[in-house]
Image (cartoon, rainbow, N blue to C red; front, side):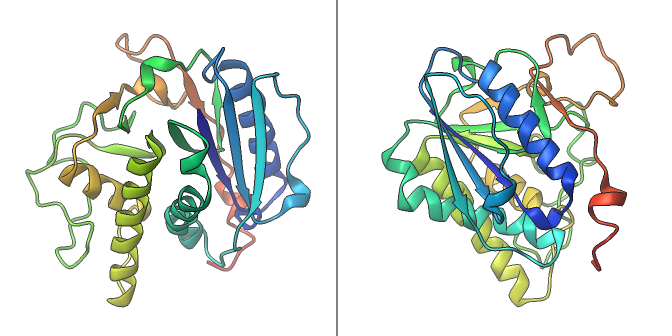
Length: 246
């Protein structure tokens, strides 16, 4: 089992170290309990990866990646980073791979029920919304464009996964769309998440994770959501981005 957490120092403050420590510690406790897990930390600064205890079935591998100038590029280039590492080694090491942002915390067991050939996470703010209301990319010139009235669900890019080959397909296609947009000076409204939604619009996921598997504690309470498996960590955007000239 593989778990890839992507973290860039330039998103860039001591709070990102805090995110990574809590992500790793909580994953060690709740992610795929009883299974062998390889945790892949993809970071642009080795020196800030925190020391933390890992269980006997866990291995952590840390890989250095390119530092980006803007947070938007950090977000979008994640697809390229993941695809390169899947090609280089991950596909030979694990049967399933989850790709997750590190600014979230596991709070309950996240187990084998989540596995599928391709896994998509329903967004906790849009899972009940009509397709005309969700924030798909509406610029017809963008590779991420989805026509009004089309689409099934809105997916959250903070969690996706599947078999390594399916993750490779997802990330390669999303990155290709991002780069084609860049050639035309287009940037999708929600960056790599817009391209991920376009991918799943064209290639339906085999496993849908309910919002219970990725929930924002600040979202409106609903009786539908009972067992919250992952919670978003508090965001410090004014600190993380405010010091950068974006």
